[in-house]
Length: 204
Image (cartoon, rainbow, N blue to C red; front, side):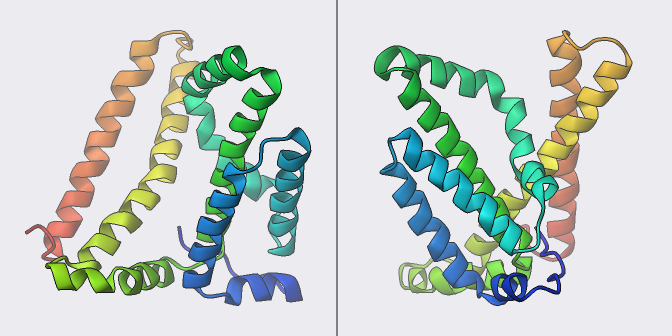
């Protein structure tokens, strides 16, 4: 989730200099706006807009693909939702719904690629500040949210390694050969994260 170094172009520098707070608010606004997009033309414009933002940030198609690539592990679930939508509202609406999800993931990825983790954490802490009045701990809540966001690409990379090992053994169709190493690796990752948090006195 650490930001990439700002490229030498003016547009990229502007995008990297925008604060984490405005970026998160913009992400929320875009998410709400996308819910109102129901036409193929509208979703095509959203896709073009996301691609333009990546280009403006000095990030090429490879960076864009790296953010949406983890979704391929959820293809069966996405396909099931798309099939239900296809049956209920037709193929165009199903395509819009599925593409909308990809656009949202790409936008969230753009924020993480152009914003330092510490800046996102600070913005979340400030946003959650009023919760102190009801006894909440904004710092801890922000840390949990930041860890949740960071876990997504970590699990995606783990799934990629497991799939490559499975393919090397010629067991692409064996669901158990994929699921068991993935679950074990995820549990080990969780244990390592827990040890790191305990070492910093954040286990209580």
